Image (tube, rainbow over all chains, first blue to last red; front, side, top):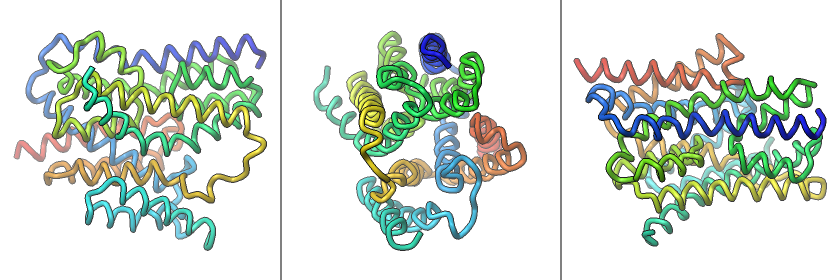
Amino acid sequence: MNSNSIWIMIIGVSIVSILPRILPVALLSRYEFPAPLKRWLSLVAPAVLSSLTTLSVLAPDGFIDISINNSFIWAFIPTLLVAVKTRSLLYSLLTGIVTMALLYNFIC
Amino acid sequence: MQKQELRQGINDSIPIVLGYLPLGFAFGVLANEAGMSIIQATMMSLLCFTGAGQYIALGIMQAGGAAFTIILANALVNLRYLLFSTSLVPYLKGHVPIAIGSLLSYGLTDETYAVAMNRYQSHPPTPSYIAGLNLSSHIGWIISTLLGAALGTYITNSDRLGLSFTLPAMYICLLVFMTRSKSDIFVALSSAFLCLLIGYLVPSTMGNLFNIIIATIIAASLGMLINEQ
């Protein structure tokens, strides 16, 4: 791909990634959503977060890998325990990162 | 501008920036290898700010694909933001002016969405908070890309530091924070199961992230049914 095509690609990608973020806030904020739709939308966040968590742990490289060789699964366990126990983002992050570093350097 | 809120937003962006560092850096390195200049790689992170989409662009470039193919693939991958952005509307309403809310939504990503939604469960959104969170995350993404594109060849494996688990760890923790009622837990488990099942049955959805969209729509709808009974 030559330099011009790359610039066209960047501008095109920019448009298609910015519009879906901005348009709903820009266009829908004028309307009052009906209560059931609001309730439905409030469930979107837990659903999205759960999908993201699942894929980031069980498919860290973009394909599903549910096996004992997937170190993300091993790091998931202590991180979840610490998150539930301490309810602290900082401790959860530290646990996850340190576990991952240990796994990478000493086991995998 | 409320300083306290701005600072809170910046504070809340720290885990995101930490997670973006290796990802943005790797994007910079790979973009260089795929034929982008340092300026192009950095501008792409500035103008697009879409991790998954930017990696897909590199994949298509390296496979010899056209610019149009990359744009189309990104249009699909970024459709999920329609859902994210729409679900933010009821929260922003009455707290953030529409024009400012729209502008700041430029910085909406999987990660800033997760952190912001978690915050809005107990605090109303403010423009300062969103600016602090979204802009510092974006700056982190841009700088790590620039560093990767410029220094890539000098730095070896960053996996040793365990930073590859930063974003998963953040998601895990936010998920724990955000699932408080039984229906939340039900929705979360359904969504997890569905996105895996869809990804397994239709592997292409793993690439365009449609499995997240479909799983979310079904799981949130199931959550409504459970609640009505």
